[in-house]
Length: 367
Image (cartoon, rainbow, N blue to C red; front, side, top):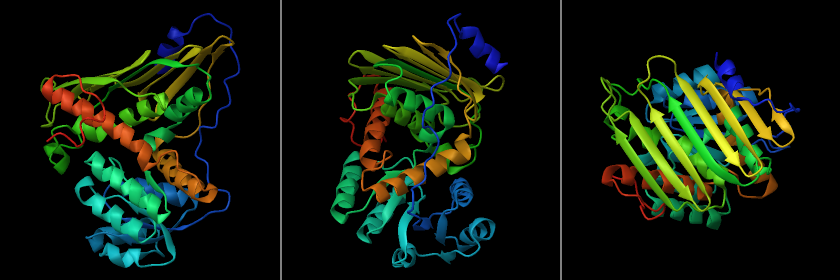
């Protein structure tokens, strides 16, 4: 049904072979570091499953709950050591990369400690709650000569990754608009700590979409963000489940729309328009997407491989390893991610004040 909806949008233009773009995660040629994981919460099942499938060398797991760390050990890496104190993990000379997957409030001090121990770091998203703290961590990583990346795994979801490469390679020309909408059921936070997060949708969830918009527009600076939020009729969760954001660029615009209270017919849609082509991706979920590319040469329909889970988690760690091996900044660097957070912080502030906000002027998450 979703493929039919996409096909209905196609024009009678001539077909073409879909451009071959490098959208799949790429592993380093030789670098296979020993990895330590700090924080063994629910999302780390996805981290470890992806790492195990990729053949990565996870040698240590750390959590305040030894029971939780041992469960991850037994299921994914039986030979890994288990620690309750992160400092014991950081003291190990053999560990070169640390994946820090705790909640944001306690994450910044852990990132700092890992950087001071001269470990490369992959931080769970959202990276920080304060842009000034984020900038200090970026500067510390530079002084220590190590890489600091953020687990913005949505960039390696196959449809987002293909669209990202379509923009980066110039296939669509200069981007003039990006419209992203998500209609789904967001019930898992009910009766969890996330149910107390007033900006759950625009912050914890939409950071993926702010990040991919920042990725699409690259070095182009956003001018303003205007956002709204509100409760859906009969919603069970405490945080508002409706949210939207409009982002202005010079000669371009982006829009994000979220309805997290859809019981029937979920849909995720992305439309990009550029000066030399357009692209659409649509499907009933983030893992089921059909992509069509429109250019002067015709209409192309790539047959994408993979899925957001586990490819997203594979991609973030793989890019960090490639950056270390190739002595360059990772594409998912913390420096770049601060632009995504600036968009999110500005949108959240706008949703609370009703005023369009300049990204970067709001330095921390609205409280």
